[in-house]
Structure formats: structure tokens, C-alpha cells
Amino acid sequence: MSICFEDARAMILENVPTLGVERVPLLDACGRVLAEDVIAPWPMPLCDNSAMDGFAVRAADCREGVTLRISGYIPAGGRPEPSVEPGCAVKIMTGAPIPPQCDAVVPFEETEESGDSVKLTAPVALRQHIRFHGEDVSPGDVIIPAATVLRPPEISMLASMGMVMVPVHRRPRVAILSTGDELIELGQPPAEGKIINSNSFSLAAAVRECGGEPVMLGIALDTPEDHRRKLTEGLSCDALITSAGVSAGDRDFVRDVLADLGARQLFWKVAIKPGGPTAFSLKGQTPIFSLPGNPVSTMITFEQFVRPALLRMMGHQRVVRPFVKGVLKEDTKKKPGKVNFIRVRVTIEDGRYTASTAGDQHTGILRTMVCANGLAVLPREATFLPAGTEVDLQILRDEVTMLP
Ligand SMILES: Nc1nc2c(c(=O)[nH]1)N[C@H]1C(S)=C(S)[C@@H](COP(=O)(O)OP(=O)(O)OC[C@H]3O[C@@H](n4cnc5c(N)ncnc54)[C@H](O)[C@@H]3O)O[C@H]1N2
Ligand code: MOO
Image (cartoon, rainbow, N blue to C red; front, side, top):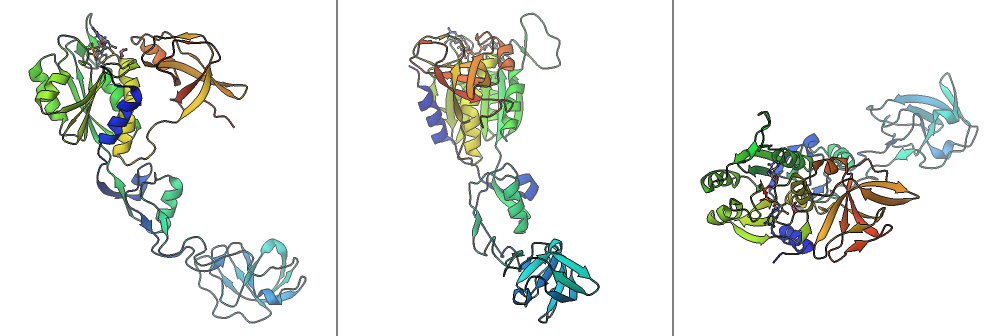
């Protein structure tokens, strides 16, 4: 009996732990998830300051055409004049503190300066061109709540609040183990009957792309002893991914050895294609994803199950890549009973996403995965989807121009 796709993913997300907190230098926090509310220690701006290069004035003096005496100069980073008398103006630069008697700033473009006097050539409104103390942030405000994904705007705010070190959820160390006697390591010469272990690399790249730290365990030979040794090593990480050895073959040891090691299997076999033989287990709190060995199946099951889980472990709320609606360009047939993920080229035509097959859909065909920029999700019970049928699309590469 297989579990349905939605239940399998939900079960994984319910069972993966959120990792603990570490404090990292501000710049390293970009892309990470904030683990605690950040509360403003001081106001922003810290004082009333000028939004323009010009003259700080008393608005009450400022009929259009009036001439004022220039009684001082405050550069950015300078100190406010101790006092500005009626009928006077102080030359001021953007960001410089406003003298206490002044209540407006007149930009240079609206003045004519001559010697130590300045004529105002436009009307002046009370409070114009002043950035007021605390108008942006008040002390005590929760400026960034926990669970926020930190991007450059948040980094800017945290810098403004003096945060040198930032509390974020840890990145998982993810062990990656490929299994199978037919495998050889990258760098060894190819030989008939041998296959280069590409899955460890696609998985490590995918782990890295979503923010985790891959730990390469290499290849486990098709013996229970070698599986036991390498799986045990993998269980010291925050998560473990295995590739291959999970279908019905007589040397598919992964699940049995995991069970011997005390892992609890939550499911094996999901009603999806490709990726049917996927298994998910827990050893204590450590999630173990046993993915099928076909390179295409490995990548698609990573995308559907492992990426969301790793993002959740890092504290992300939104973990599943958003779907967009799009139409199939070709008639598409499938067997009922499984959600199918087909590799497609997504484009935009007449303002709609359209998807056409990226090539041969057999799971042995890696090239179709390389050509694809998206996956079309074909519903479980569908059998024939004529061209023009609307389906969910997962966009896997940024190069698809988004709808306006
Ligand atoms: N009798 C059955 N046979 C198969 C079933 C089934 O249900 N009953 N399921 C098929 C499906 S679907 C898949 S997917 C595969 C999955 O099998 P395994 O996960 O046990 O993987 P293997 O058989 O060991 O390998 C499959 C394929 O992938 C290549 N491979 C394996 N590891 C790597 C790697 N690290 N890098 C690159 N390529 C790898 C391997 O050589 C095989 O060609 O089982 C079907 N069979
Ligand atoms: O599910 Mo297998 O993963 O179809 O190739």
C-alpha cells in the first residue's frame, strides 16, 4: 500500500524538528530565518534631521521673497547651532541635525544665495523636508518578528539597530549516502556495467542551494555491513539522505539496515511517478529520506520532499515552491492512481503559462531534466489530459518571465 503524495509531504513536515539557534555576523544572516523577535533599542531617526541640502529656517519668517541672514552652517555629522535668531537661516546638509528653533528646511533650488544672505523664491510649509525623531522606528517596536526570512531590507534595518550578531536557525548538516555496487566515484574512468555516482553530487548541490550543508559519505557497497557502517555515520548529522537500494531488488538493503539501527519507518512507497519507492524514517528526531536511485527520481523526490523538510528545519514557514496555473501544449496520457510529475519547458504565451514536454519522460532520461525549467503536476486519477488542460506547474528555474 502506498501513501498519497499530499499525506507523505504532510507527514514529513509534521515530523522534522526545527533546528536550534546560532548567532551569526550580520552579513551571514542574509537568507537565514530570524529565530527571535528583534526589538528596537533606540529610535530612528535618532534626532530631527534635514532631508535636503539647503537652509534650516523658522517657518514663521518665511513669506515668499523674504531675505534671511545666514547665521551658521551644519554639515552632516555636525552639531545643531545653539540658537537661530528670528530672521536668520542656517545652511544645512542632508542628514544634519535641525537646530531646535527651526521648523522647516528650504532646499537650495528654492533659494538665491548672495554673500551672507539668502532669498527664498518659493513658499515654505511648516515642517517641510524634516525627518523627525522616531518617525520611522520607536524604541520598543518589534522591528522584525521571529520567523522572518532575512533579505537586504531586513539586513539594513538590523544594521541600523546596531545588531552585530543575529540569532538565526541553524543550517542542517545533511549526510548524503549513495548505495550500489555498480557505482564508481567521480574521477574514476567509466567502465561497462559501472555508473558514476552523480546522485551524491546532485543531492549535495540541491542541499547547498536551499541553504543546508552537505556531508558526503560516498558509496555504500551492497552489503549489510557496509550499509550499517555508513548509515551509522550519517545518523550523526541533522538529516540523512540515501540514494537507491529502496525498491524490490534482492540487494536493496537500505530500509532493513535502517530498521536494525532503530529507525522508525513512517512510510515506504508514495503514489507518485517518478519516485514511487521513496521511504521516510526517523531515528530519534533525525529524519532519513531514502530516495530512489534513478537520477531523475532522486532529484524530483528531493524537490518534493527533502527541500521542504530542510527549509522547515531552518525555520522557514513557506517551504513548498509556489505553483502557478498553466496549460499543457500537448495531449498527455497517464495511468490512474499516481500523481505524475512531468518535466516541461514553461513559457508565457498570450499572457498565460504554457508547458510543453521537455523530452522523453522515462525516468532513465537525465537530459530531459536538464532541458526542463519546470514540472507539471498531473492529478492522481487523470488518464488523459488533452492539449489546453490547465494544470499546476512548479517553476524550477528563474528564467521564465513572470506574468506582469
Ligand atoms: N520489481 C520492481 N522493480 C523496480 C521497482 C519496483 O517497484 N518493483 N521500482 C522501480 C523504480 S520506480 C525505481 S525509481 C527504481 C528505484 O530503485 P532503487 O532506488 O532501488 O535504485 P537502484 O535500482 O539501485 O537504481 C536505479 C537506477 O539508478 C541508478 N543509480 C543508482 N544510484 C545512482 C547514483 N548514485 N548515481 C547515478 N545513478 C545511480 C542505477 O544504476 C539504476 O540505473 O527501481 C525500479 N525497479
Ligand atoms: O519512480 Mo521510479 O522513481 O519511477 O523511476
